Amino acid sequence: MSALKDTIKSDLTTAMKARDEVTSATLRMVLTAITNEEVSGKEARELSDDDVITVLGREAKKRREAAEAYDAADRPELADRERAELQVIAGYLPQALSDGEVRSIVEAAVAEVTAGGASGGAAMGQVMKIVQPQVKGRADGGVVAGMVKSALGMD
Image (cartoon, rainbow, N blue to C red; front, side):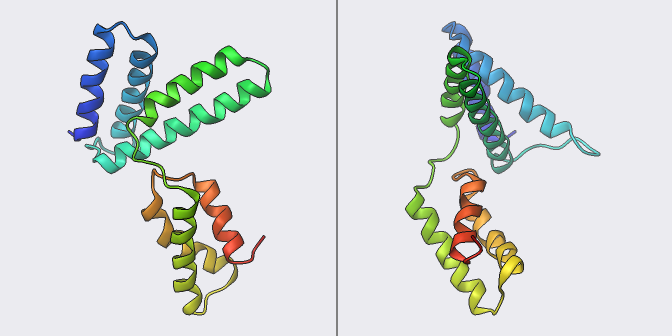
């Protein structure tokens, strides 16, 4: 079992003993998402820490989008709940990269790809292939894609 999954399970037990309803409910949802990922596909598998981080990133994105939707619908109490859940999940994700750090990674990848003569959509795919493993779980994919497009002049 992944060390991160073990940590989440032990933190769930601690949250339940402390009667922390938001944390325990959030960790239950996260563990369910991890279990669903483990049993999806043709055969069950054990997730690595990287796979668990991917699941956590997906869950965090759901919370961010839900909070925005609740804000747009003028439901601040539900938006606050989603943000509280996001805070719990964020505690298990790696430290997020700053815009400057992401920009430098993107610029290095663009320089490498354009030196090979690629341009347009093909270059975008090649750059994303280089950048994605470096920022996985540490930067929003949409923001990264936007930076790549602007660096390639595809705005």
